[in-house]
Image 1 (tube, chains in turn orange, purple, red, brown):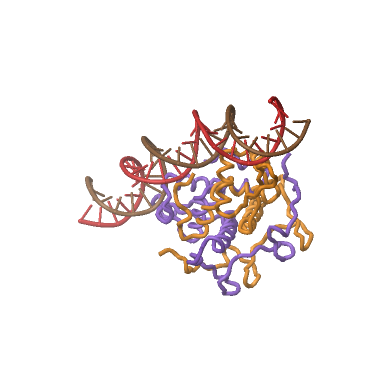
Image 2: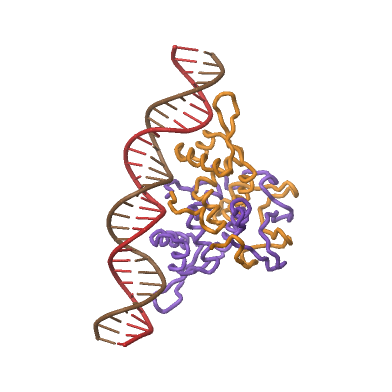
Length: 150
Length: 150
DNA sequence: GGTTAGGGTTCCTTGAAGGAACCCCAAACG
DNA sequence: CGTTTGGGGTTCCTTCAAGGAACCCTAACC
């Protein structure tokens, strides 16, 4: 879709969108995360066109987010999250928290998260990796970093 | 772009993507967040086509993520984040953390976050909203919620 | 040796993205 | 008082990706 080259921008958001910048890719990632690893499973779960699914999977594999591996001596393949992909799932967890709050409506959230550590139904919250205190959009200053635009 | 109706899926990721499901919307959100509030500022900062920017802004306003308000007696308008939009910025902060780690390369991150509470350069980390312990993709079980598919 | 199933390709149509040009309105200028 | 300027868009055209249906290939299995 995008002819604009997001990956070249000096912006980690834009670069991430170059990996994952249309609606299907995050949903594919979610499917693989929850255990839909095979082409036909993902295709029928999402209702995505086979052509577009092929393209997206190739792209995600090229980007190192997914790994394609055989699971049979027949030519059968399944997709799995790499470490890079697994960490990207954190973004999905935040999307879920936001969607649950603002878009789920009266029906309530479609999926619940039970946290292993405490056993409770919960959701993610953003904290500072350094001091552990809450870290939300109003709690920070932005400074130019070493990779800022020339 | 998408003719598929993501907003109708019983999935908070898909619903969020219906609000924000192409590469420009998150970048527009970022621009407004960092203080580019006017049409021409955003357009020249991002290099987005004026037509597409108009469409995206309308959509984000309709979805309640941005607010359009006059700032002059002349017909001049600026865009601001609503509360709904500000909370969506949390997703961008997680995207930045991931992009900084996996895509910034040798040049380093383009932007740094200084946390008000501790004064340190830092990044977001995901914690359980209930118990405060780390909450990453492997730390949870998924259960069907009240809004699960019929 | 026909069938089945996974994992794709091919082809066509529709519709969004990109880009350039144009437009409208209200001050401010001379 | 006619003209310029600048913000905030629209219009039109071209190109390219998404959606969808049909088809293909390979390796078991019966």
